[in-house]
Image (cartoon, rainbow, N blue to C red):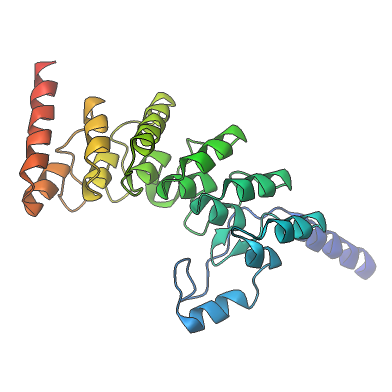
Length: 251
């Protein structure tokens, strides 16, 4: 009986070890993605996967060698997967290499419940986002706190080129066509229009308004896009919202 129990335990342990990771572990305190203090970096890299040290331009041959020897393309570091890390920097060739080696588009989630597609969109790297979508990423994923791809898109840096603006608008239109509602809310109540307003992304805000976004939609603290514009004293934004409300009332 003891041998049978031990054998069953070994099978369970082996199965757990072989199970694919579904979410990156929470990083230890002070080692979150973006925390570059010396001690934080030291702690974060103690158990870092080897792949983490060969990401970035000029390291493709080293990355290829590690992937060829069987290193895990789904590894995590400080709460974020290697695929999400590469996507957040717009490293399309790196993203492609990881995917070809077996990286999964939507798992593991990062420690906040985001996907690599979210990482690409929130960083404004639409080429990487297109690649992930083509390889099966789920654009309808809802992360922790109600985050959607449309929220992450609305938080991206404001594009500085016509091409960048066009890409951002195409993504917004695509996400709405896939069924995301224009006023979808985070758990704290923020809509994509609220986030675009906070980023001062005038053209994206105009785009969302044209598709029915509500400039008076309040978050859990009672703020709204209109209220934010008034607080900042931005007359041009207030005028934008008033025109949108008038157009909506006339329809």
